[in-house]
Image 1 (spheres, rainbow, N blue to C red):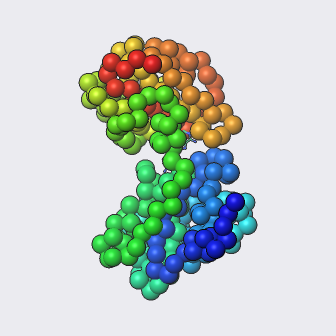
Image 2: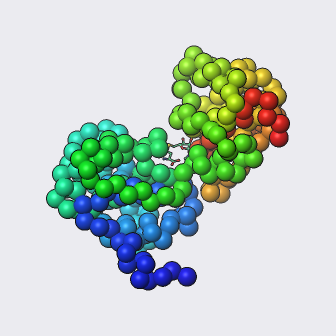
Length: 240
Ligand code: SAM
């Protein structure tokens, strides 16, 4: 049960910047604390105002939105910092998942830290953590590599660089390149290296393919449904 007294203390405080995780696909994954903060901040800085407006509509929240995206991040970080210094509160969200993780936000958070403005994380959905936690691959030590390099030379070098790893490697990949990435991984790491491919986490076509690269590559090639992917490479020598 939610405790109303404690809930009241969750509301946004003046001059605070909140880094708010939002659902990857299933709107039920928004947290109670995120709802209260989004409801009470002065302004919500978001990537695509249409995407965030849909979430707010679902939650029955009306707050001013300001577009904060890769293209205007430098300028908006300064603008938002000024507002925070003037005691406005700001919630930073991205289209899905945790802001700043391969999404805009880093510049604002760094500027806040430099200026002594409090930054408060509201943890929640994050594709890499969701994928890793359900993969069955080792979770005790892992390296998050961001996106697999998009060009063929960089992609091949990327997988080769993880041949000898003793930790798990997690990377993001787009639907346009996943098959090329699995082919490059197969060449660099060999058919027996264990890999997990997590697709469309929390969405209708969520699926996990986990096993040796030879098997997972064939399964993905045979699956006509595409979407958003997380690739997870097991440490060398790991057996499922
Ligand atoms: N900030 C986001 C997070 O917290 O995960 C990541 C944003 S990044 C621009 C988008 C990439 O994250 C996608 O290309 C995909 O690799 C991964 N991703 C996002 N949502 C996903 C989902 N539902 N299932 C699988 N991967 C997802």
